[in-house]
Image (cartoon, rainbow, N blue to C red; front, side, top):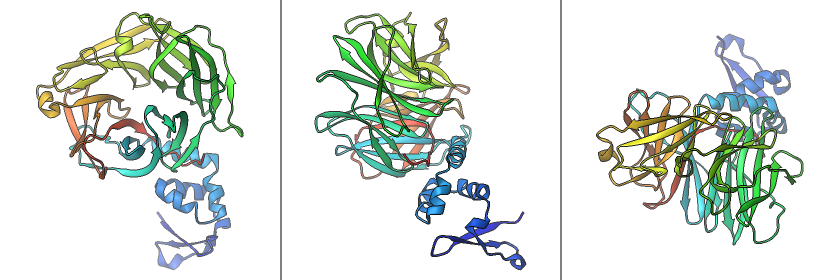
Amino acid sequence: MISLRLNVSEDGQTIHGRHSRPSNSINATVENIPTDVMMDIFSRLSSKSIATCRCVSKLWVSILGIPYFTELFLTKSYALPRLLFVCEKDSELIVFSTPQPTNPYKHSSPLAATYHMKIPFGRYCDNIRPIHGLVFIRNEQRFKLESVICNPTTRQTLTLPKPKTRKRLRIHSYFGYDPMEKQFKVLSMTERDGISDEHQVLTLGAKKLSWRMIECCIPHHPKYEGICINGVLYYRASVDKSSNIFVIVCFDVRSEKFSFIKAMEPFIIDAHLINYNGKLGLVMSEGLPYISGRCRSFKMWVLKDSQKHGWFKNTYELPPLWQYEIAGELLHFVGVTGTTNEIVFSPTYLSYPFYVLYYSFEKKTIRKVRIQGMGGFKQNNWVQMFIDHVEDVRLM
């Protein structure tokens, strides 16, 4: 196989190619290299190299902006998912990522974290949700709530316009993605007298970002975080603010229609929502949405049929050494990896050394993976972790 090495001229318009065979040296301009060949070459580069290539010439910028190329790069990124970390420090969110371990039976070496960007977040941040390479953040800035979309790969941020609403009303917002139409949408609703009101949707990618009013057939009071799985956004709610009757709201991102799953058991309001192999999962330990070293097991419910409201339930026993591995720490349920079918636990606060833990459903064992490179933080800085993050090089 002939290998081609590319060198860029000073004007950025000429590529000199050199075969590994010295007798066949060539000189070619960019115009003479087919675009599909150029895109294939670019798709083999790292996201950092892609950013550098965008500075070379207008021609390269246009090639790297072709939708086919960005989808090609994204498809390859799905084969190499990453762990995403969002850390709090001095009223800023610091974003890192590392490669995601893919072989659960191989001894895991420490993973090196790559720094991406900083995002101001004000007094508090109540909603962070990565989907399909983008990250939705809802935070308070200068005593005003605002929603921001950021792309850790390109280091871009986009502040969303405020929903059309009356003053002094609480706003709930959720981030969703439709894989069929390849569209990102934000669902927002105001709260009036303990009930959601003025349901609105904003679609990213439009020439002018604006909110559209939509109808919701059943009044409800949204609670806690949401999760988007295969084009359906799930979040928990009660029938009103003071009610103990709970439902799971299902919002179809494509059709923008609501449906509801009745809560037949009290676990729905307390458990943590995760993606379990493309299905909605709820996980908890001893009645809490997190796990500690004192716990001996955890429970998980998986939605098998959203129409019949049926659930699978399993209890997973932790190995005897669990309490010595965790000691007094509290860990979050992060999610189930799509590549290794393990559930991941992450500490709530940074510590040194910093580890994340993987529990194998198959072997009933725990493995620890050390994360390096998130230096400069104090002990006990808050950190949130996400799995199966992908790199998206399209510009917002």
